[in-house]
Image (cartoon, rainbow, N blue to C red):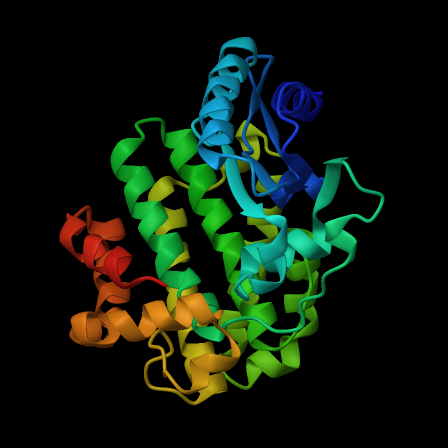
Length: 325
């Protein structure tokens, strides 16, 4: 119902929109609603990918989406997680998209909710590779998001939910590390279980058991959240598990890739993953941010400590965002 409202509002006056695709948890039927005192609160965000023609001003679309988002927040009970995230692209640039997780999800589980053409874009593209460094940096990115969220949010229940969601992202990294191209949290959790033999080559039996237990609980909280499930563990226990599991995953990908720094781009090797535009961007940044890029492992560890101990690391996060491709 909310999706229909958004589509109708965006397209009723704008004839330059060619296609609207819903991605993320909403398109995969993994969106969540939490009942608090009998009132349903929307926990999921809405990810939209909008294909436009050359005459379209994407700023007009983004400004309109901000108005729609506020209208929905006034009309429904929403949580701090709710937002409408929009990416716009001209139709002639679709095949130049970078090989990242978001674009993989777009073409593998995206749902077209509006189109002016019989040939839907989501069915015409195929992703069979992922930029591995961008994938690995998801570990830093999610910890950055965790740090930023816990320093800005006061409600402990939402802090817990966000930590559970970040534990789920471990499945994303592990699956693609072992070349298992699957979409959605539930499918990735199931795939990690099937990767038991491969994972046990790099981690102990107890670590594997702990990983599966936390990922399973996190999936339950994501798909069918209840106060009872969320309150099984304290926030401190969840955060401790989160950091331990991210360290475990980091150890695994280092061993699989046989790299000392899996966060750092090798310019030559990156040609196969990055778009030409991103590759030029990387080269232009190389001399400016060479030292910072080498320190990404340090950033990874500093952010972990900040999450657990409550120490500030805003300067470190700014440096990470400066070098991010």
